[in-house]
Image (cartoon, rainbow, N blue to C red; front, side):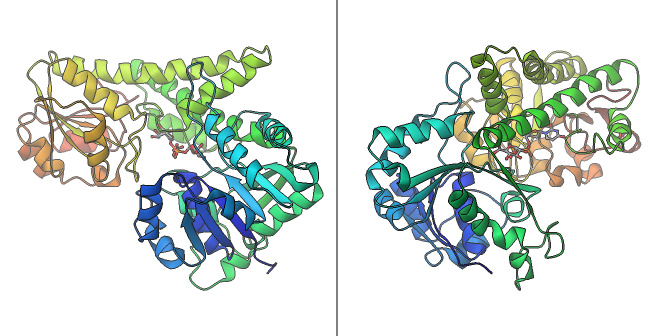
Length: 459
Ligand code: UGA
């Protein structure tokens, strides 16, 4: 096992916090910095600011020990060999990523540097950000032999972030110099050499000592593009299957059978072919727009991405029309909405298709009774207060006397509903499922009118 590395992670959002605790779990000494004093205080007191599987255990194991939390950036930078920038890069008004947080952090790093540091972009950034970071450091008088800039994009998913970090499909490192590449390979050695997987109590997953994580060394620009292109390609797969779903529905075919048939071709693969309400979340919508902007900056038209976005926006419209054509008028109807998070296993409601649909229903005069296993609090803050919107304590409470049930998020809890109990609670046994959690024949056997996505008899 190579010598542990002292690491500073700047930003304690999804990526920063997960990276910090996972680096600690891999045996490194970590300090995680954020300028949000309340969040740092919460973390110092053992609190967990986000809903994420395995995070509470790892924070309990390493918090205050292998990983420290602080607001003191200068001291943390000075005490570390590698500095990971994991601050937000939200979507700006032009579609481009807003890099002002990255620039602010780089300026602070510049003031703090006293000797050689490897500065690592972990946030999702457009190509050439590594170059900009280098320029800002130069302008602020940092000696060229005092730093290297590396791009090391993160591919974790919310909900499975810790598992994804410790069992990655690949680790991409865009480094232009030998010392920087060597430091990054030392940081990831527990995963790429398999040491981590041999440890007792290591998190189980697809990687193992015999099948360790893959390490791909590239140029910084390639690494930056790999991140954007990966997310854009996954978004493209989702829009593709949603477009095929709309066709399947018109010709009485079944999108689940079609996706299975397409996915068996190993060149295509079965993942990310689940038709539904379109992609949401804090990454795909922002990254597809940002990648399109990157191409535009180079004078290139990447219209394919425009179409990916258009299909995604249309998908929620298609579902809303489906609700209307099933229930006819919406004013005064009581509708149970199951799911608020943008996907299962998270409390994140950013760009959630569910919230968009609920807002439309309320505008149309319907009464919505909403339930989500994890995202109730966040949704209550995000959705406008309305006497036509209430929050239920569980699935059956939401369904009580409702004219129909909508399934908007693919939580396992919604795939395991007691159908007889649901039927008894409802005024009319109608389920409109935006995530295809049930087989139509099973719903028919249980006495439901069942409307889903891309399947025969949906209307
Ligand atoms: C996504 C990528 O999957 C990660 O690899 C990446 O690191 C991350 O963005 C990021 O850039 O930070 P995430 O946004 O957490 O991760 O969620 P996904 O699991 O990818 O789902 C995104 C959306 O697509 C969800 O709304 C989900 O419901 C939808 N989806 C996903 C489908 O509609 N169909 C599918 O087959 C898969």
